[in-house]
Image (cartoon, rainbow, N blue to C red; front, side):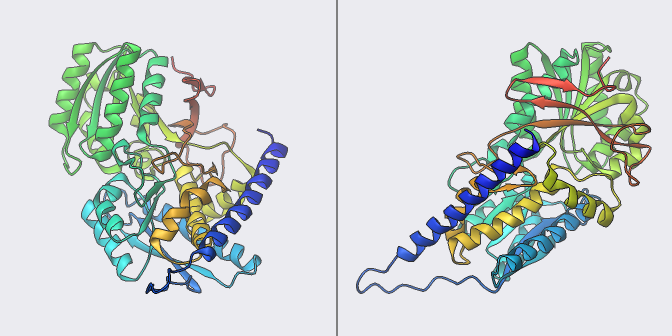
Length: 434
C-alpha cells in the first residue's frame, strides 16, 4: 500500500473512531435506572488514568525487559501529548511491574496492580495470561497482551485481548518455511508450557499435512542443563539422516535456548543440519551476544509477527533506539505502544474507569484504530485477526541496507517474509536458503 493510500485509510479510521466514541457515549448516556432501583454510580474516569504494564526485568527474559520498559514510557509520553492536544483534561500513568519471567511473578504483579485500583493491565507472555486469567476475569480487569500467542488462550467473551495473532498462524508459517527450504524431517525441541505446547501442536499438524515427518523432545523450561534432551535430539536427527532434508526446530526462550545451544554446540549430528526458530528468540540481545556465531552457522531463520513498514513508526523507532542502544524495535514493542493507546481510547469510549465497561467497548475501539502495528482489528476471541510474519536470523550486517550506529557486526536482520494468505515464503537476497 502506498503512502497516499495509507493516509486515506488512516483518515477513514480516525473518522470511524470519532463516530465510535460518539456512539459509545450516547449509549452510556441513555442508560438510566428503573424506577425505584438503587444503582451504585459507576466510577468516573480519574484525571490520572492508571494502566499497569507487566515486563520481565529479572528472570530468563531479563534482557528484553528494558526494551519493553522503554517502549511503554515512550507510549506514555505520546498518549499524554495526544490527550493534551485534544483538549482532554486527563493524563495516563504507567505502572510497571516485574514478573520475573514466572507464572507466580505474573500473578503477584497483577494482584499488586489490582490493589492499586488499576482496571486495565498490559501483559507480556502466554504464561502471564495462563497465570492471571481467572483473577482478571473474576475481578473484571481488562488484560491486553502485546506478545501472547498460545492458541489455548483464545477464549471468546473473556477480559483478555491480544494484539498479536495466536500460534495456529505461526505454526503454519514455520512449517511452510521449513518445507520451502527443503526440509522433510523435523526434529523439534520445545518448551513444556502453554506457549511451547501450543506452537508445537500447530507446527506438527501443518508439517504432517505437507507430507513431512516430525519427532520431538519436550523439555522443562526451568531446567538449567539440557544435555540429556540434546542427546535425544541427536538420536532423532541421526535417525532421520544428517542432511539438508533434516532440520531442527527449537521452540525456546532466551535462557533455555542458550542452555540448548550449550548442550549441542559440540555435537556433530546437531551442528551438521540447519536449525529453525520462532518468536521466542527473535531480537534477543542475550542470544545474539552469547551464541551469535553458532546461530549464524546453523542458519536459524526465526518467525515473528510483523506489520508493513509505515511512516508513523519512524519517530518511535528513533526514540526507542536512543533509549535502548539497540538496533530496531519489533512488532511486540509496537504492539505494547498500541496497547497503551487502546487502553486509553477504550476508557474514554466507555466513559467510566470500569473494567466491564472498558471490556465491552474494547473490540470496537480496536476496530477503529490504526497504530504502529497497523489496523488493530480483532477476531471473535479478541486476538489479532490477521497474521503476516517476517523471518529474522543473525547474520553479518556489513553492507546491508538499514544499518544504524546501534547495529552489531552480527545482528538480527530480516531474511524473508511469510504470507499466510498465500501460504508462501519470500526470501530476501542474499539470504536465500541453499
